[in-house]
Amino acid sequence: MRILKFVYLLIILSIFSCGKETNRTAYAKIDPDHIKWNSAIATAANSWVVDSPVETDKMITQKGIDFWENPDSKIRTYFRLGNAGEIHIGVRAKVDHGESAIKLIFNGTSKKITLKNTEFKDLYVGTYKVDTPGYYFVELQGVEKNDKEFADITEVLISGKASEGESHFVNEDIYWGRRGPSVHLGYEIPKEAKNVVWFYNEMMIEKGQDVVGSYFMANGFGEGYFGIQVNSETERTVLFSVWSPFKTDDPKSIPNDQKITLLKKGKEVLTAEFGNEGSGGQSRYLYNWKAGNKYKFLVKAIPSKNNSTDYTAYFYAPETGKWKLIAGFRRPKTSTYLTKLHSFLENFIPSMGDKVREVKYTNQWVCDSEGKWFELTKARFTADATARKGARLDYAGGSKGDSFYLKNDGFFSNNTKINSFFSRKAGNKPPEVNLSDLP
Image 1: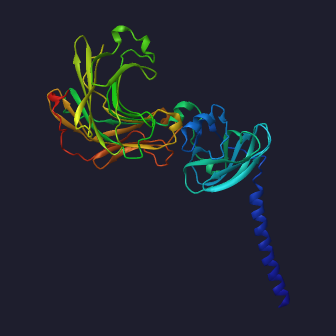
Image 2: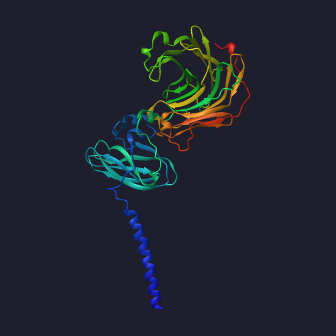
Image 3: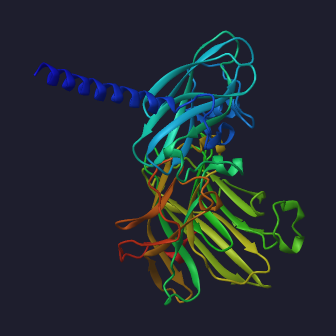
């Protein structure tokens, strides 16, 4: 009996020892000095200082994280993982002089690392668990330093099973990648509508979604666009533009016979030429529109003399209770009614590309040359090249009840398939606007 007990004890010890050894072997596979990193995520393209666009512009340079002096600054580097599982994380970093300590947080787990190397070096930080695919970030914060700056960091490094699927981050066209994906809704015009003269739309941005750098475009058409912007914390604008038929980003190069002509403008509306994204005529009305309020937009296009088309935009604010003329432009070498009706949402400030924004569009209608109104209840969702090539996947759009919506930026994980079609619930109530009474 004693012999049997002894044998039994040996078996138990053997199993226990094997378990411990297996565990040690699993962790021994992680060799910090010889990890083969699957991806190097450039901080220059994928990092922001949390809630500080001013620090972002200063610290996120073309070389990566630099001028990092403030211990309160929290720097996040974003990327999208296609797999769940284990992930190894490191940084490519150096200090200019001396020694510094920084804190790295991933998925709620924090680790302090000390930097002494004055040449760039790949440094393993830790291994973590990813439960579901989607967007994640590495957050860095300074702890201690004996020099002016904490560290220079050019890349966040990832490896392991979670990084072996389709990982997405910006690695080219950094300017556009940092702005984030622009998203669009293309409205389907009923076949019964003949020669669309008027396009009516209503738009509302919820409180908190009116992020600086946003252009919420309501009434887009084949030759221009009309919407509202958040230019800064203190300035908001109503913007209406018409492109020249001459293709250029330099308005000064447009021949005189292809320039956009101003026909009329509303009181306090500023007009000028614009460039950089095509060129043409632009009108701006400085107006402190409010998040949570619904605004109305109305655009008219009608063929004019000498093979030209006249475009006019009107804006209705509930605060004033009346329609306001924004501007009227004449486009040469063009004879058309309204076509390619659409809305879009974009961020035009790269340092605000980490902030999510959303807009709701309701009650779209067109009126044709016979004076008949037709409701628009179908739309196709599309996105720009930044989205299509997979640099940023934080884009969405579709329908909710009687409205369409668009959403972008902020690194949310649930996106919408590009080229999806959506329908909203019809309201069957044409706009209450007397077209012959407009200013």
